[in-house]
Image (cartoon, rainbow, N blue to C red; front, side):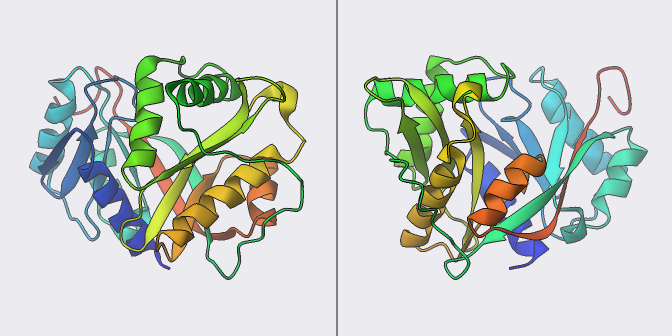
Length: 256
């Protein structure tokens, strides 16, 4: 697996959004159900070499929808893009490592944690609520969030969670997108603070990867956001493979 494969996945994934726009070597994936910048963002085609006019057209597509112009991509797969974006005023939000797991490296933890697949509206709502708490309120739980999780599962991806004993609430969970370009992205993995350190994240990670391998993916990748999460991923068979760049254009700066 190489940087181009991960970037091609990102392109295909955004093309699945309810309202995708393609312009000047970029694909912007828009979802009218939310204004979240973590859902509404763009990525370049592998090897893209955008002009200033191409970048301006991309920015306009975001501005006319009242959204923050934002991109996520593997810079090594399109070396000219970061320079073009910075010339237009884009600023770096973050640089994250990405890790890759294959059927050969997957290690299923012997934790005894019971991982389930959501099937009811209540299940999907419980997963959405748990993830909202796990991520410190960065996004509130909502009916649209629960529906988005259901769409992920019903469109060829997977959602898995761990239920609290004797109840309907969720201790932690996560999702993995449908495969594209031979790989799939595991994202949105989280555990409620009160239930961390019990093997929930590792069990859900392994279950999601196994589900996508069963559907034909040759690899699953994810981003590491900190040392604790990284240890969980390495323990379940994920290995460092590259980096992803996050950039955005704050209101009042750059091209218009």
